[in-house]
Length: 107
Image (cartoon, rainbow, N blue to C red; front, side):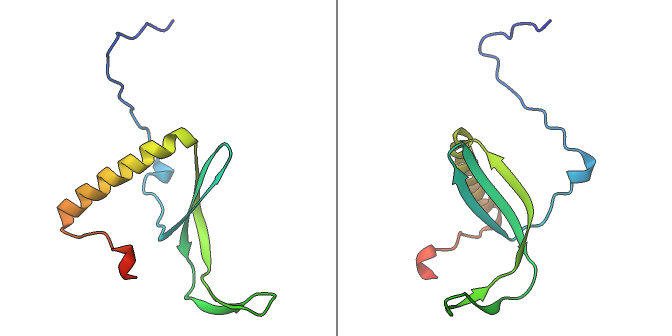
């Protein structure tokens, strides 16, 4: 039988990472999209140098071959927490490394 938790007790999540995924996977690109019930992040790695491609209408484009190495699905409520955590971690990284995020207006 489960004991009732004392009011005001802070939660702690104890993560258990299986050995086969503990090292993680390398990804140098992420594609983010959504459906009505959640958000999907496809972490990918480029598999070959960029090349010139052409679509059915004859329009040229730069072809960037990539392989999805991990797909993560998260509920909409979790997106806000993820954005907050990413912002906090990016700020800490900037302080630790002295590096700044790239200004999107300069590219």
